Amino acid sequence: MSDKVYVDVLPEFTKDGLLIPKQITWEDGRKYEITRVVDIKKMASTKAGGVGERYLCVVNNKRVSLYYEDNNMWFMERAEK
Image 1 (cartoon, rainbow, N blue to C red):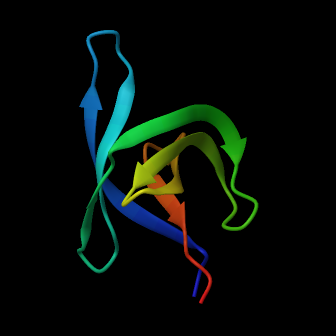
Image 2 (image 1 turned 180 degrees about the vertical axis):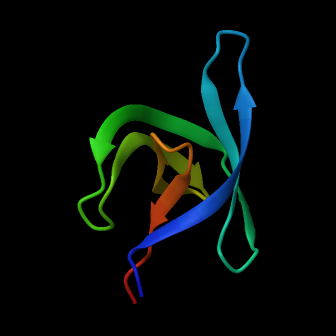
């Protein structure tokens, strides 16, 4: 199983043109509200592979990384079991 999980994201575009993710839909259909975006920066996912804008988000009081690739797709790293 791949460490890279493509997810659906409900975005918001601000009047200044910023792309802000508001909700993540995981591969099993569960939806998670993003309560805050802490940081946005270009970086690579060393675990899942791939490069894009990394959005450090707060979901259920935990920080998670959400990546937006140049191909306009969102992905996350699969959690270790």
